[in-house]
Length: 362
Image (cartoon, one colour):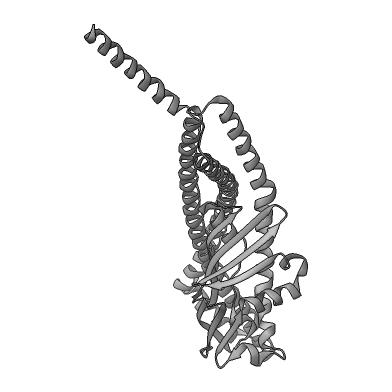
């Protein structure tokens, strides 16, 4: 009897564990799990946009290849024609025909006839030179088109490779989300799916346009900083060969240029980063990046480190898209021809640009 009872209890305990484990698998998702699902879904919608951009780029590059190939055919025809003409000229010189015609001058009956004959022969020689130069130019243009085609074809291969990479990443991530949703009770899964759709709509309709507006405004405002070293406040911002401005002064300067946009933005220079925080309705957006000095040409080049909104971190594809579409770089030399950028720092609330005299060009 005792043995029977023990077996019954053991069986009950095993069944309880199985039921409990199954219940755990389909338990309501925690806040952290839900947030991870939403973050993955946000990455998916960004990958979708990147794939769409790559598809458009593929079409454009393919059209460039078709156009260049057509030009190559046309140019090849011109080269053949120019080569034939040049060949006739070269054969004439090789056979001595061009040299012998100059003796015609000596058969002229008068000095006036000789001058007329000389001008006529000079035009023949000039035409010969033009023919030879036309062949050289046509051949060079053909070579340039061939190089251009090779470059465009390389670009197309890179676009297609990037497209495949992003597509595969997207498929894998979507499978992760689908698998996780299957482990959640249906009513909870429906709630999360609704949140995902809302997240996607917000990103496309509000977030992307907002970041585009911010990047465009900053790109237009940065070159205007040169006004501070050309006006009455030059002494405040220039210290020898260094330009420096506080993040508070920069914020106020930009607001004076575009109050409608910059009244909602605040700039910070800390720990080597150039940070921007903005609020537009229910969207709080942040941009973090850094400037470096690049040569050939000399300029301050901005690189995006982080983009985020409402505690959502944006993907590398969106950061790269914003950086490539909106040029936040700044050339000192374009506005102050005597100077170039030497070093840039963003620390302790200060943007400092160290300058150097522009090397003399030979």
